Image (cartoon, rainbow over all chains, first blue to last red; front, side, top):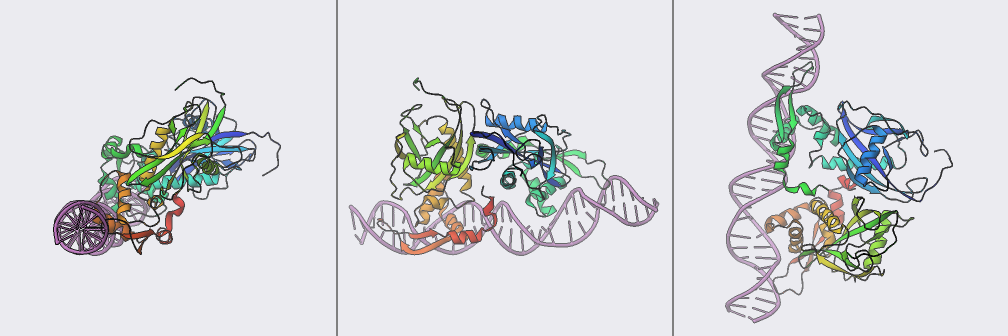
Length: 232
Length: 232
DNA sequence: AATATAGTGTGTGAAAATTACACCATTAAA
DNA sequence: TTTAATGGTGTAATTTTCACACACTATATT
């Protein structure tokens, strides 16, 4: 990193966001290209400073919006990074959030703040070096969702509303990084009873069209009414 | 709460600790009696402000020590609380930590700082109202360890080094708040292979003395060498 | 119309894990 | 010696998990 004279500050709170998306069978995260020192021109997770009068949850939403144009995601904090020398300009404590979204929601990525030059999706495999300690933050977040995938219905936030079982399976395979058996996977998923089979089929494919399914949040809640408050 | 004139501050970082212990078949947490406004005389979780030049993990250790006299616990952060109006004097963001310890480690509870009048163990059932939003912090932490009990070897941190299977079972029963079947519990625990049977027996009981066991951290690590890095 | 292509959709048996369940053994104290 | 209290043990039924292979269907190509 180049030497630059910059003001220092005392103690700051910030938010960083690890936003996961799924596209073309690959798991991706949202990165920005920084337009300011330090780490100008580096790739980084979307993140910025929390204001005095906003909760950290609100800050996370606002910051993500300003840097990427994305709004109304359901973000969850997953870890707080508080080492002393994380930031070249002074003490920064950072609460990291993740969210899972549908990339193909035709949402345009368009930074509002000039602080990011652009925002784009990048596959989680072969991530480049990121600014600050963002590589570590990403890793921690990725491990978190990997765990959660198996006991929370987070997969459905990454898929289009109507999806095929094959899509669902390939998402699991991407996250767990291993092949799953098709028959067993389907049997198990369907046995839960929270997938609603639709009367529709896939369109525009040059092979036998697959049935479409929807995640039935109502049924899910009914089945697992128990530990909904264990989430936090 | 009474009205008191106090200085306000801008933005502060703090740590709160939820320290679990197990004694007489009951799960307990460590509380302090506050000696300062606000919430003077109230019961609260041990907690205080993070310094400029210490990491949050270090701060957690220091603060717990100053308020309770306890040192060298293995603390883990579990959630960060960042609502705007959590504290009557201004903006405070708090990273909450938990730890599990052996109460009968003959450790004396003796606050160093005058900020706490005393520190003591209190059963988690029937907790009184706590200062600030500490009741919520406790609840969140309790839910966390309840989950973790089933996939991490945290139970052993609460028991004496040498323990009987009945003690282990009653700990699980206390945390999950339900009765377990003795034979199945023993079969399962022993089947993991990380409990080391000792040649000793319980002493001083007026009934058949039970065998003592030890948790074998080495074997545990060998068996679950896999996702040790998924912890965070 | 025939064929190639590519992904969809289905069942069974073996192995492993989980659950339900009851009685005798041991010790200290009365 | 009796009582009170807890320790310690096995088996069968059920459920869950896992491994495994082939025919079906829609489309594109010739």
